[in-house]
Image (tube, rainbow, N blue to C red):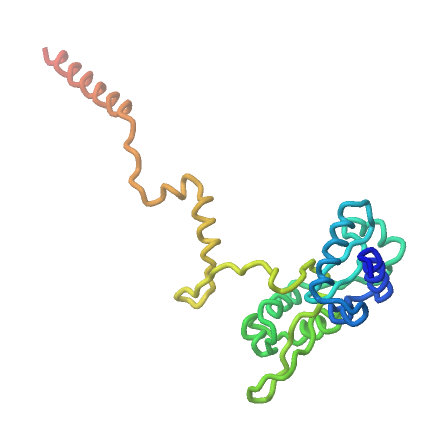
Length: 229
């Protein structure tokens, strides 16, 4: 089968599916190797970039999906998409970040990190399909664990969790409070001149005032001598 025909078939499959299609599904349909699938799709992605196309192929873990380009969202949304978008609170975003950086984490572990109940946030993230149950952990009570979904990756523009930015280095101080070393270094850099000189000996006063005082004392002494004479 020619490469051009394989590209047409892959494009048709991704368009008709309307969801992420795994490499295994494409291999079964086209009966070609995984390496060939990856090479052909990489070429298709490059072709979409080079031409003025309104679509692109994104990779999510080991799956591919045909999507409209992000920069065209403002034109597409008023016409087609009338659904309510997920409205995540800061607490829900914190919970989502914890799950993303700690796959297969349990609710008690989330609450231990945040210091507050996570029930409402976990339910909301499950409702939006951003996290999912990842099976029970072999611990007392058999607590359920959670992980992020492919919808999370697609929404935040990641191909896999490996693309998540590195967390800043931190340590616990004597009050058991988290101290982020990188932020401390930045604060040291942006200190004001007054803060930077704090603790240093003060600069000596100009000698001009001392000279004036000495001259006044001399004039007073001279005046006293003249009166005596």
